[in-house]
Image 1 (cartoon, helix red, strand yellow):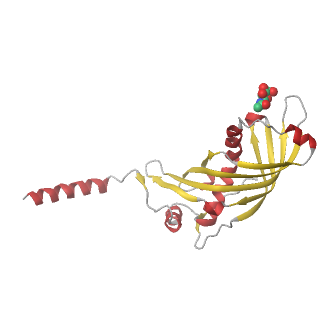
Image 2 (cartoon, protein in one colour; image 1 turned 90 degrees about the horizontal axis):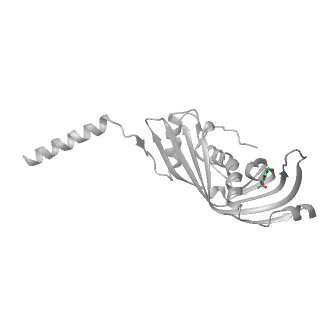
Image 3 (cartoon, helix red, strand yellow; image 1 turned 135 degrees about the vertical axis):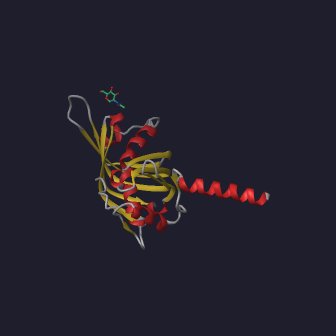
Length: 220
Ligand SMILES: *[C@@H]1O[C@H](CO)[C@@H](O)[C@H](O)[C@H]1NC(C)=O
C-alpha cells in the first residue's frame, strides 16, 4: 500500500514536471561542441561545423578600438592572435521563457601582438598619433554572449578581463616613448575598454569556426 502511494506521488510529480518545462535548459556538456551546435542550429540558420578548426595562431589585418575614458583611439595593425584555440565553453543555457541563449567562453593566456597606432584626442585640437609595437598575454578573460537563439550576430557581448595582462612595449620613436604612460594604476579601466572591442571578434571566430557558423562579420 505504501509503495502504491509513493508511486502515485512520484508519478504526479513526474507529470507536473513534464507539463511545466523548466525555464532554464542546459542540454549539453560544455565540452560537447556537436551538441551545442545541434541545439543552436535547431533554432537558427547557422551551419553546423563538423570538423571545426581554430589555429593556435592567426593574423587579423586590423582592429580599431576606442578608450573613451582616456580620450583616445587605437588601431592594431597585423594583429597576431595566439592561443585562442585554448578557449573553452564555460556556460551554455537557454531560457525558454525569454528565448535567449547564454554562452560564455573562458580564454586562458590569450596572446595578442600588433603594431599599434595610438591616437590622442583633445578638445579643439588636432589628434596626435603615436606608434609602437606591443605584445600582451592575458592570463584569463571571460566572454559572455547573450543572444536570441536565432541570431548570434546581434548578441550583447560582455568581456571581463579577470586578470590584468603582462605586456611588452617597443616604442617606434622618441615622442612615443616620452608620451607612453608609466603610470599603470588605470590599467584595469584601459583593459576593460580595450577588450570590450575585442570580445565580438573573438566570440564570432570561436563559435563560427568550432560550433556553428552564423557568418557574423568580424569587426575591423
Ligand atoms: C580627457 O579629456 C578631459 C577633457 O579635456 C580631461 O578632463 C580628462 O582628464 C581627460 N582624461 C584623461 C584620462 O586624460
